[in-house]
Structures are given as structure tokens and as C-alpha cells.
Length: 263
Image (tube, rainbow, N blue to C red; front, side):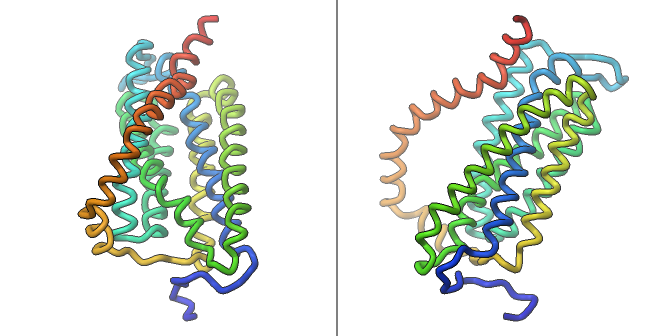
């Protein structure tokens, strides 16, 4: 393989693909950055938001909850666009790199600009980045395996989801403490640093990954397939109830946080 080329097919080996370590570390650091930032949003908006003159101008609780849930909704809208971008135009690797840089930019804005404008720009960039890479990272992990080592795929995903939970748990323990003792600059900055680490770790493993080329015709064929839409229609009835669950679950980072502040 030429040093400027990437593998397009998994190696016929029974061992764990070498790139899996990079993908697992990347996911843990990315989840730390996301959940750390998310865990302090409502507290920041209702107690530390500034106006353009640099004086306190916090939101009311109802407005803060609206901002939070609009952001959470956007995070789950952009996976549609990320999937199309990856499958039809850039491929998963380039999509993850590009949108991870957008993601990093959002963290930088939140760490440096504590006004309402900075909040809107930062959250928009993070929603695009976090949501856009969401359909790519798990699929990219699966791309690394062949039939020869497919029996290890379950183990790889176990480590992958273990990293997600470690990152999320660590961030929600540390970031609120940083906000209380050091303010929003450091509290948003540390998750931003972890996102830069995640992006760097992912990039450093590029020669070890399998890179699946985008296939625009395949995407168009899938979108025009009646069978695909029938399958989506059957699943939609189930996911209506899933939406209710997650809309209630996300109260843990908004209404429940505000309730705890009054206790």
C-alpha cells in the first residue's frame, strides 16, 4: 500500500483491527466533551450569562429550558445530514474529521464568549458537529471488521460503549465542579480540550482504518426504494414512543437541575 493511500477493505485477519483503539479513545473523549458541556448549560444560562457590556444578564428558567431543548433537538436532527454527507459525498472518515473541527470550534466559542451571541454560535456549531458525526462513528467501527475477525465485533462495541459511559460519567462529575470553583471559561474549556484530543486521536489512526468510499448512486437508490420507506414506516410507530422517553429523560439536564438548585 502506497503511503498516501488508505485501505478500502478490512484485512483478512482473525485479530482485532489496529485502528479500534483510536476509535474507542476518540469516542470516550468526545462523549466527555459533549456531556460535560451539556451538564452545565442550564446553570450557566440562568446564572452566569453576560450581556455585550460584560455584566450579568441571565435567562429566566423557562427561556433556558427552551434553549436547552432546542439544542438537544438539533443534535438529533443533524445526524440525517451527516449520514448523507458521509454516504454520498465525503465518506465517513472525512465527514468525522470535518465536523469534529466544527465541533471544536463550538467549544472554543463557548469557552471564550459568555454572551447570548456566543452561546447561540457555540451551541449551533456543537449541534452540527456532534449530531453530524453521530451516524458515522459507530458505522465506521463496524467497517474495520471482516468475516475473519467478525467474532470480535461484539467485544469492540463493548469497549466502545464502555468508553462512552466512562467519558460521560467523568465529565458530569468534573465539569459542574469546575463551573462552581473556576467559572465558565475553564468549565467549557476543559470539554473543548477533550474534543481536540478526540479529533487528534482519530486523525492519528487514519492509516490504520478501512476507508469506505462514498456512493452517491447507492444513496439515491436507497432513498427511492419503496421497500426502504415501508421499513421506515413500520419502525416509525415504535420510535414515536421512544421520542416520548427521551424527551422526558432530557429533563435530567434541564428541569431537574433547576429543581435541585431550589432544594
